[in-house]
Image (cartoon, rainbow, N blue to C red; front, side):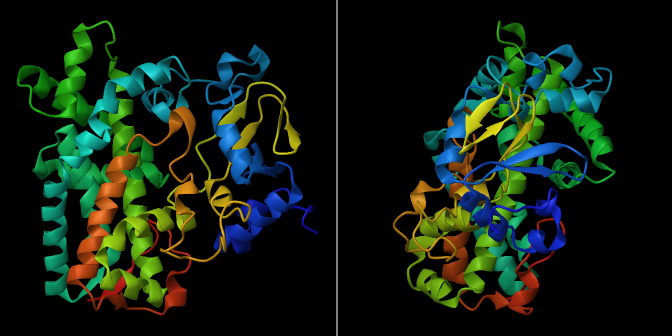
Length: 396
């Protein structure tokens, strides 16, 4: 029955291979569905487009639950732990007013106009990557095409010198993959930023780090943990998700030959490829954990106060009440712009313009300059592609 769920079903191996069937059933149930994650946390999954959109704007759903719940419910915070302090100050873990203040300090670097100035630089980088792919013949779509673009763009924006960018990438991979090396990577990354900030205080440059350290003597100054948390989030959110977007766009095109043929014939469809990839298989399955600050009614059901709320962007973007043929990958669809892969409301992705630009340029250049690109493995072997766990073997 559509209304019957195992309490930890979302983490079953079969469901992880195809979560969309689970989200179809959640929508059909017409209510939030309780799940218990591997750590024992209660999570109410919401998967309808209208319900997820409403919850993303709901004033009683947010991140800083310790500000709203009784002392007996407050999570323990170890303020002596550097990693915990940095994580607690990241934008995705904050509500207003701190979220509003910190986002305002960096938002100017990610407007559509500001990002558009990077197009020639990103295009030149894409051309170098594609030329190298032609020279190699057999490549990994992650390491040789997708990975170098976002890490170099974010590093360029922040002001990380080119010789240091390989380490920038390694820290990001360790932090986002939740490996045992993650906490150590955060500490090393923080120490590096301390040094970079000191260099920019002494010798400012035209980069984001110089702008942030210049705020230290102003009323809206950043403290050290906030600065590290901001840059770490830009690194992870701006890099990891865009790598995922580019790789999955390539994978989807090559496993849907008519769509790949259409793009080769009309490279201007690259922008449509970006949007349909975001809708069909965006980088974020469920938004970072949020909590109900009180008992709330949403999505046809009740979520108890202080429980986690799991808002599924994958579920919302396959909602048949919003998208025609939602389980089909179609770069010509007219309803694609209704997707919410970048979120909604005050936490709408800060780097959305940049991610779209980087991905569009890569898809254009690949279609124009690598028209014979194909998978070098059985398509079934890449159906469950996950960044940091798989390569994407390609033949040029």
